[in-house]
Amino acid sequence: MLAERMQGKVALKTFNLRGEHDLFTWRKFAQWLKVFKERQESLGHKLLVHVHSRKGALPTLLIAKRLKLKTVLHWRVAAPMPSIVRRLADVVIAISNSAAEQARKIGIPEDRLVVIYSGVDIDRFTVPLGVRAETREIARTQFGIAKDDFVVVAVGRLVPLKGYDLLLETLALFPLNERPKVLLVGDGEERPNLERLATKLGLEGWVQFLGFLSDIRLALFAADVFVQPSRNEGLGVAILEAMASGLPVIASRVGGIPEIVRDGETGLLFTPNDPFSLKEALTRIRRDEDLRHKISKRAQEWVAEHHDIRLLPVRVHETYLRVSKG
Image (cartoon, rainbow, N blue to C red; front, side):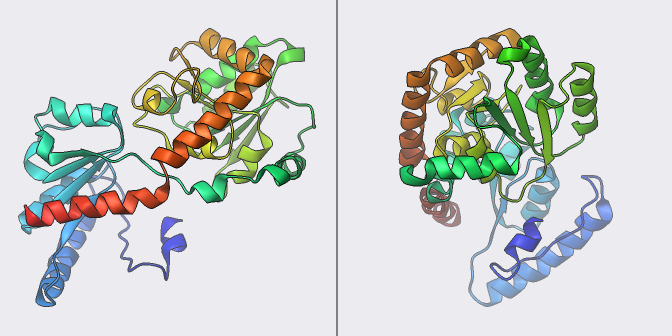
């Protein structure tokens, strides 16, 4: 899907990698990169390899080092980092201080570590005040949601780490007259288990599994609150998008989340893996309209100030220059 979106916009070469142990495809990638390097260097261009995914990072870095190329590893998770990265990555970009801690733990020195927070397209997600009510009505009609329903939206990969089972368990704790509706956007290996859990908890009609959406804005505009129940999270771009759209955010106190969701200021935090803590936060945000508005306003200001997507290429380019001169 990413390749389709980028077609014609950037030079693109794709490899059908069937897993980290797919040696045949890694060999093809190494052969292509060697030829590409020689062609670029013959034109006087400097080359570096920027690795964006934890999966496949080590083979990519090993191949790049074998070809004597400069390397940048973009660490997007708050998970432990393999110690070999210290020898393979010239610079590590971390998307939060929590992610950066993983690099420090394996001995990456500060002069090879930079924190560059993720960014979002503020203009794309911000709805002008004058059309907000109309946009909300259109979005709710799209998903068959009544005007007075209180709606929670969650966006992400349906995997155990994201904690959507906890969200469903929390939903079941509410009495019927106070139970929110849930829009769950995303797909993944955990979807069948989550659908079974929803049935087991008697949540039919309360949860919509929307699958992958190429444009999540309608789901955000239809909702009253965004919930991120992750068990670990490097930062959470979906959280930033929700904040930019004017939604109050409730998120678990894990990883890099507290760096953007400041409890009581830009959102509410709850104890991870605790459905009662999440229920308390949802009840509070639902009952206190002033708090909802205050948090939404401050969150939008925070995202605009610190996470505007236009800041990202400038900071990454500065890192490239630093690596190429090193």
